[in-house]
Length: 528
Image 1 (cartoon, rainbow, N blue to C red):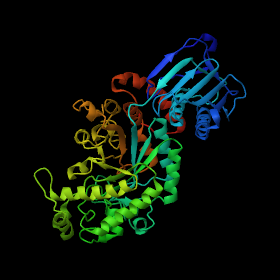
Image 2: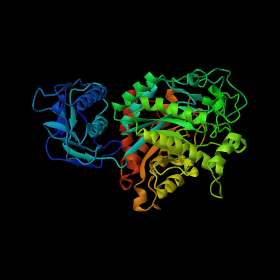
Image 3: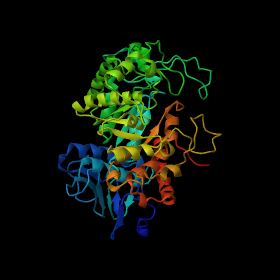
Image 4: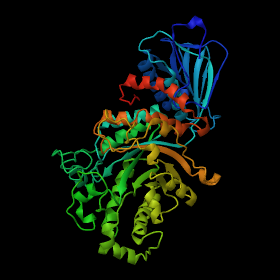
């Protein structure tokens, strides 16, 4: 995007960012010159636009060292960045950017759309700490996302991450045009969210006495490990995300992955315990007892407090990796199967259908409160309600099955979207991880909507998500390293139409985004 040599030596913007906007049309005429006299103007005194303007001022100061004023009215008619609502734009997250020699105008149907326009402008700026002028070539940019659901998950149960890092993770989502933060809060290795009616969940259930060394070796570090978020801290994170147009979806995994809860309240298990928070990784036979009415009261009580903290439309109930070993011999579970007249067959065991009953019962409870559920694809094995959204992780088959049954589906297959895997097969310089090899090109290549689906079925694929499980992710810097730059590749899967993606071109554009990572001090993987 060359401009006249009269502007040579000035820092210049490049609109070919990650994710790439749908349309960038360069225009005739002189460029816009951004300098210290420019204002950021939010129109009509809109409070959301005012906040957006403050974000943009912060980004510009960080990138190019210019301190711009945020105003509801400009000091001068020319030389400003205007943020506007334009109801004629189609799509709540769509935006337009018009750049000419006089002004930059970022428009969206909603303040949310304007925010994504701001992210594009931000990423187009050069990274130069001190400059008097930034040249932005005349152009018209129009853009909108492919998928409504664009998410990243962070597991804080296996390893706990402080509030400041959770906020940084949310900032990374915003940088990559993502709108959903899936927060995996509980598991066999620790319960991480305060529930006031059940204080032992955090007093006992958040602490493991030790952690295995290596990959589930018989050696342990002999160090107590714990941590949890207070409800006030969780509300703070929800608000922080909301300001960046990101929804926080909490996950309380059930009926499996519940040793954190069972260690605190052993009466909720089939055997009565004793149980302990696990210092190992994996799948365990002890799960919630589905034949015990106390289990349902416990879940409903937890959901009540959770819904008070998290205003999200969805609550994630997990449902994965729940062995039915205990249920097959538990008098209460077998009694529940008999009383409900649940029958097994060649396609589905009675115990799997009992899990379906548990999930559906809690789903109906949440539906009455105006919420919906998401579950991992295993919940399809238990005849759940069609209103349940399925998160397909064991490949794409779960998403295909869900869509054909009329469920909405979010695609997050392990082979493309699991960022706990190594990013290379040359692992000698990397710390111990869970294994695998998922390089950035493989993530980039993903097509979330299978060709085998009909047009109607394809509409049920509502989004794509990347997951960071943290069995081996012990600190924030390693978490950054694992998601970056694969998060950038995923952002183009989520945002761009599949036929518009081009991996060699993405790699060229990624170089500028890597400079943004470097500016903020993020750790990221670089291919050797």
